[in-house]
Length: 342
Image (cartoon, rainbow, N blue to C red; front, side, top):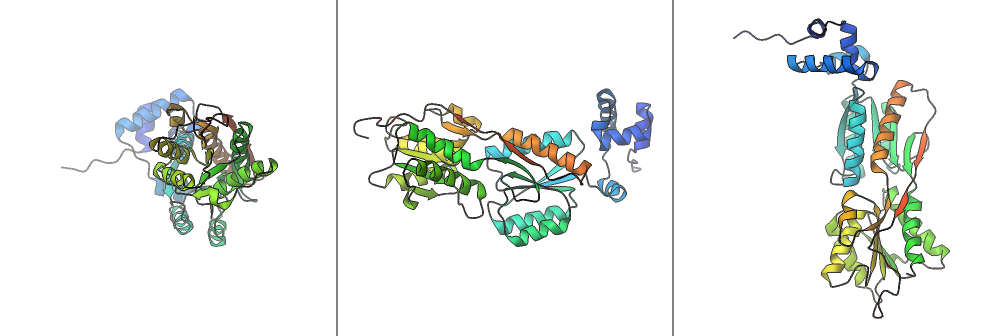
């Protein structure tokens, strides 16, 4: 059987009755083409089984039309929401997202970034600004745009939220309810500036109220529901036990709630619990979780827009965008004393 020749831009242009230049723009820079033309070109290209030769395109343009992103974990609703929004926006502009995760391991992050750079990505997106100098040297040597999310280092573009304020809001809410024995379950703070900032925000709010946050009332855990249960169990072993817990991520707060309830501790009747993130499921727990909203989808949308601006003009000054966060009041927190035997 003779081998079928691959369809070309010429074939698609002939079938669409348009120019080769228009077809090329539709497939590589869709934002520059009228929607009806774009839809027609994409439909014809799909029916012909056309697949662009990215290697050839990269040799000609010096661009791969890919953006590399390294996130701490893919097992996170907050990062998934951000990645989904980034992929949607970048895809609409002819770019493909290449995703790597490193499980909060600095060496694994450096290896992931090295791989993405070796694939010729046009830009990099990372979470946070805390990493070894050797990794920063790797990023500098790549000489491609870098966007930082959640937290960031000076000299590079940033889409941030105020993580200090997130911890502060959570703690002040509990203080206003009358709680003074407050425990914190957080991720490991070494090389994680988001978690470190949230804990410091809690510490600041307690300090303003004349209270301490002793190390014994901070439980560092991996960011999972099971780890949240373990952190809750650790803090409940104290006598007197905390009357309120802050999960520096909703996943940890959810685990804490499950552990407390499994031990017959009513939430919020015997103990108040608050999270940070406002992932979708937090509104559907029983009781629904009071939390601090981090706008994950908007972080993704703004990051994608920043990537596109930077790739359009690398001479632009560094951008620093700070997105708003807010307290979301639900049913997992209540005034102290909740019960006479608390």
